[in-house]
Image (tube, rainbow, N blue to C red; front, side, top):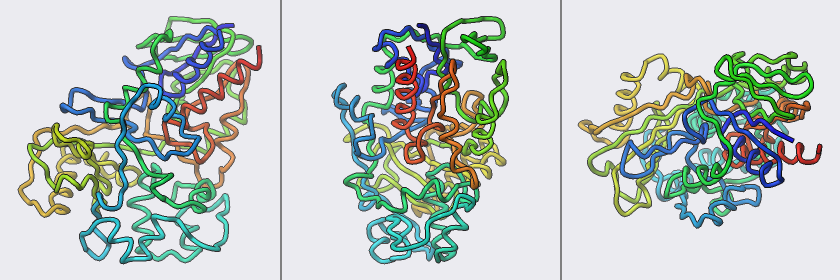
Amino acid sequence: MKAIVIGAGIAGLSAAYHLKNAGIEALVLEGRDRVGGRVWTSRDFADIPVEFGAELIHGRSAEVNTWEWVRKLGLSTWHWNKTADSMIRTEDGAWMTMGQARRMSPDLDVTRSWELGDVAEPEDHEDLATYLKRIGFTDEQLRYVERSFANAEGDSMRYLNAKAHAHLFKDSDAETDYGDYRVQSGYDSYYQKLAEGLDIRLNKVVSKINWSEAVSVTANEDETVAGDVAVLTLPVGVLKAGAVQFDPPLPRSKREALDGLQMGPVMKMVYQFDEPILDRSIGAIYARDNPPMWWSPSLGREKGDVVWTAFFSGDYAREMLDLGEEAALQKGLDTLRRETGQADLQYLKARWINWPQDEFARGGYSVCLPGHYSAREKLAVSTPPIYWAGEASAPHHLTAMAHGAYFTGQRAAAEIIASR
């Protein structure tokens, strides 16, 4: 049996890795000139690894499969606890650590802990803002949710299916389970090892998939590769844009799944400074302005360049896209100046990472739209000889994360192995 894996992001690498281990030939076709997909470690921007894409390992539960590789490869990680080492500009203008702000404001704290008590369950048709208003959130609380939680989820609240986030409303962000961790040597220390030994062909842009019986994949307009099955890991944005032609057309269930999902406009801007802009114990800023979320990959390191990353999505990203790169970088600097009280702050160099206009991603990660709670499940269902993977096809609680993408590749591989 021969499998063609389309895409060398984490999902595609995971699928190929597990197929190969099962003795199935797996050929990976990747449009980019690198592996990793939306996980992208830069070693040119600074003398420390800087993540232009996915950056953190989220949580330590058994489902976070990245830890298996961290342990196997002996990688060191740093824990971001988000309380003592993060500053927040509160809605009333105060400037304090996140821990202090949460202790002083129960209204803020509940937007971080999601310990909502006995409230009504969200409905499929409700967007996140509508649901939170229904259970009593104030306008101030909604602004906290928009700039922190929704921003991290990939889009503005009106595009987020409230029911798809219900699992979070039953849990807290206790650091023991839901803290975030950075691979200090760079995320590529993981995904390059995952790719090692696999048959990967770079710069192969897939344009057509014939899947009437077996599979025939056309790349770069005129190169054709045949296989028995295919694992499709392309992002939702690429599929919805019609960048790939399917013959025969995809079934109605897949079209319905894609209609219920969209790519959140997630972006980053990274800045290098000649000296620390805050005390070295502070590694994150929750700002009131755009960009609303900042963190420093320099935190937890004894030496190395001072780098700060701005992370923004949804309407924050849409505003930046309208401004264009130069004006957006300046707006980011102006926000950092106001929040830190340093009117003359200057950077050495900066770069914006524009995932919405990246032809191989067309956004940061998928969001489930109101009224389409079952979209991810529909996308995940295999349609032999095509099997489906990618973070958009993960269960709701695993989406938008590298370990969720890995899970889907492993799942697709298991389905193929079982079909032999």
